[in-house]
Amino acid sequence: MKKTILLILVALLPIFLFAQIDELKAKLADNPADIESLEALLKIYEDNYDYYSYLDTVRGVASAVGEIPDEMLPIIEKAIEMAQYNYYSDMASELSRIYFDADKNRQSLLFYLQSLNSAWYLSESDVRDAVAELPDEEPVELYRYLYDGSVELYPADLSLIVSRILVEEFNENDFLLPYIKGLFYDGDYRTSEELLNEYSEVLVEQPMFYYLKSILELIEGNYEQALDVFLKGKAYDDGSAMQEAFEVLYYVYVPEYVMELFRAIVTSDDEATLQANIQEYISRFQELSWIFSWISRVPEPKKISELLEGEEVVISYNVVNFDTQKIITGFFDIDGVLQGSLNNTIYGQFLDARSFIYISAETDRVIVDGERKARFMGYDVYSLAPDRSKFLLLESYGEKIVMVGPDLTTLWSADGEFNMIPPSWSPDSSRVAVSTGYDVFSVFDTATGELLEQFDYWYAFVFLSNDNAYAIDYEGSIIDLTTDESLDTSAYALWAEFGVDGKILYYEQPEDYEEFYYQSLRVFDISTGADRLLAENVLFMDAPVSSIKVEGPYVYFTEKDPSGMHRVVVLDYTTNELLFRGKLNSDILIFPDVRPE
Image 1: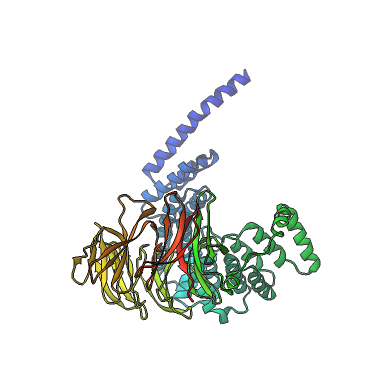
Image 2: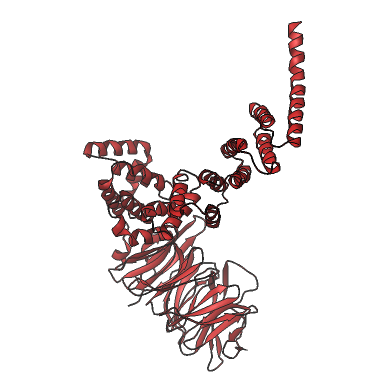
């Protein structure tokens, strides 16, 4: 009998509960400020783990009550924390805005910005606008308060924004390292490196200064240098900063086996600890012994500086194998025999006979190696002047170009919205045409950065002679921009470049779009109107760097033979003299460049 009664009560319990919920909802509809009914309803939702109804109820009551009474503020605060904890990001943002509007103070401001941060909606304007709503607060102290309340948050947007404002607007240099650390989380290594160099004298006794510089060296693959710099920082460290550095390290790409060995070394305080740490490392990566047994059989590959010390290397080009997903820059002798290579390089050229400049495929960076050395973080495209005296960098996000001079320092820079269309230099390297918007091309003085002229019309490409500018329209006609007249070429063009003696080299327009084209390369003489074929089945790649290179009277390109094999060719297009024809290769050969004497 008792069991039957118990079962009846259990069956009736949801009915009683729903009735109680409906009654409390009705009371709140009549009087949203009824705190007692609100708390009773929220307790039912919380006891039954119905978090959405809990949060939705608080939102509805807070929106309906008009002026929020003080007794309701702790309820809203708890709801915000519940929303954040249970990943109701949109609800947390809305509730925190209501809370901030009802009681504008430091804590409600922090709740509001924390909620936007966790929802991935936060912008710098959000922070500045919200801070401006507390006009009686001292700005620097308020931003410091926000930083302290956001330093542990993920994502790190709020702390990054606040530290940037403190550094850039209020010159609060004690926030430099937090700001730079935030840039690492954001992947902006170029700005990080610039700031570390700029403020080196201010930060010279800060261990994190050395740790962050060390991490930059790790990203570059300069492991010995990274180790030396990290140990310098350790000399200033009381033990509190190293773990923070390791946290940053996990946000960047460094191979795990490198990172763990690096950690084993730098955490060692004596020889005994070092041996113990490395033994533990070997036990974790047991495959390294097998790898080393093969690597030890062959000599270490030559570095670029060693390759270019001798005279064997005469040409470089990329070798691409899509089956194995490998891309290397190979250095070849006059007979086409490989003398050495660079792995994971997208594109490279000789800066001079002893130095090579290339784009790394591992991170956004352009590197000069060999006799001269430099690195440029945050750039993934560059274009070398025909006379090799300077080169143009394009920022990874296309928002900036930088002209670098012969001493590898910046000559000038320009901000804008730059497109991934190959820049075109005048043959004398005095001007460069860059795509600066949809159908917009800008011509800059390469020495000063002065904007000389701009073309805003239906052009697919603009290229330069020493005196004039030419364009290719979307039909493929080559236009003289001084007269707006079309040149009488034998074929439509996809790409063109001005050479010497009034000659234009152009690539015949294909019928359909492809990433790799195989069409004719032709030369048009402006003075005579003669148009002749240079080569057929020439490779042209749709890329932000031209795959055909014109330098003085020479043109470098890749041709495909009837069997589908590739080889590199260097021609004097003024005389048709063949200077170099490499060996046939089943891989794709691209971006050839001849070593200057």
